[in-house]
Image (cartoon, rainbow, N blue to C red; front, side):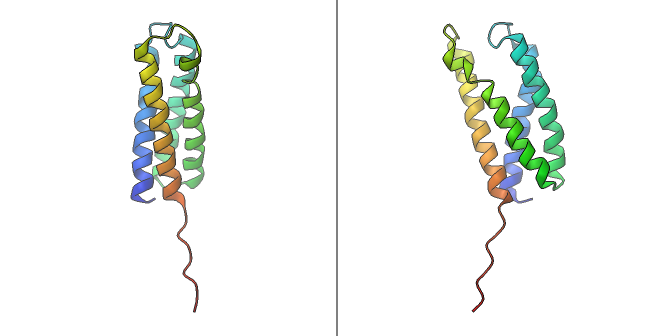
Length: 119
């Protein structure tokens, strides 16, 4: 695991903790409790995957990126449903943005270095 990858794991791990606590901070409307519970489930799965990826399991890192992107997709309706207050929209945007950054860092750290050409 490279430093870049570990930085991405930290970002995605923090987002996972926020998702896990989501049901405690919802008013039942923004986000709806069902979405908050789905997010909490994805957060719990993500925390387990962060631990496995931190230990060097590449498959766990790739699965983590996919789960976190799925979690970010649950925030998209905040921009499509009318009547969503500004605060939850900002939180959704930050969550999506940080997910993209964390996923990019994890994936960038997984790239194998190019082989030097033989002369």
